[in-house]
Image (cartoon, rainbow, N blue to C red; front, side):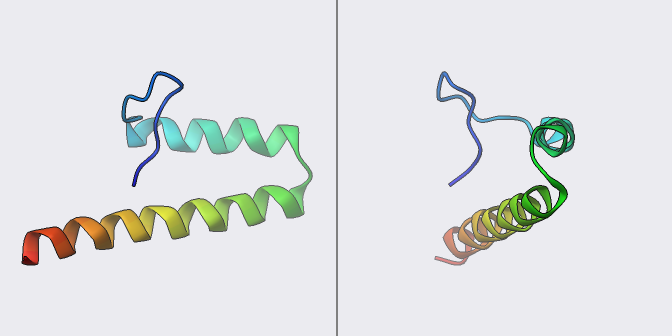
Amino acid sequence: MGDHDNEGRPMPRRHLPLLASIASHLVDEKTASAMGRVLELFQGAASLGKRLQRVR
């Protein structure tokens, strides 16, 4: 599972800080913080999934 653009292509990780910055201006601070934590969880899950695939 990863981040994708609206065309379904994988989104480069270098874009994520920019997207987080833009999102923080569109929502209040608490919501932006929660969104950041959710994004970190998804990135962690994706990383774990990749590692598990390599182990198999």
